[in-house]
Structure formats: C-alpha cells, structure tokens
Length: 104
Image (cartoon, rainbow, N blue to C red; front, side):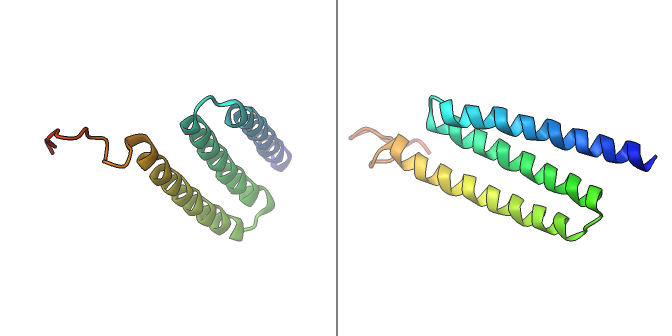
C-alpha cells in the first residue's frame, strides 16, 4: 500500500512538473505582459502544490510552512506587478481626457 501511495505521489509530481514546463513556454512566448504575469502566477501555484506533495512524500512538516511562505510571496509579487502595469495602461492623468468629468 505504501508503494502505491509513493508511486501516485511521484506521478503527480511528474505531471505537475510537465505542466510547469508548458506554462514556462507560455510565459516566454506570451504576447502581452499580463499573459506573462498570469503564467508566472500559475507556475508559482504549481510549485506550492509540488511542495505540499513533497511534504507528504518525505514526511517533513516544515515543507508545508515553506509552501505557505512561498504562496504569500507569490501573491505579493503579482500585486506589485499589477501595480506597476496599471499606471502605464492608464497614463499620467488616470485614464481620463482633459475636461472630462469623473463619474465615480
């Protein structure tokens, strides 16, 4: 039973690794900056899943803590990147033309 569990965990890790490689191709070839940000976010999510699987496989509890910290840093990275993209998209005046009233 233990062997079957280990084989399933190893297979799942291998599949997730292949998905990371496929997403890395999208991150490199993505036509827009937002596509690249989303691809990197997906890669980070898959890495968190792999860390959780390795925690079960190796019976090491500290890997769950590492996965949680990595997930938080990934979230902050996406937030910072979104804040960097937003002003570039809207322009210096906040996306409004001169003389136009804001409705919000």
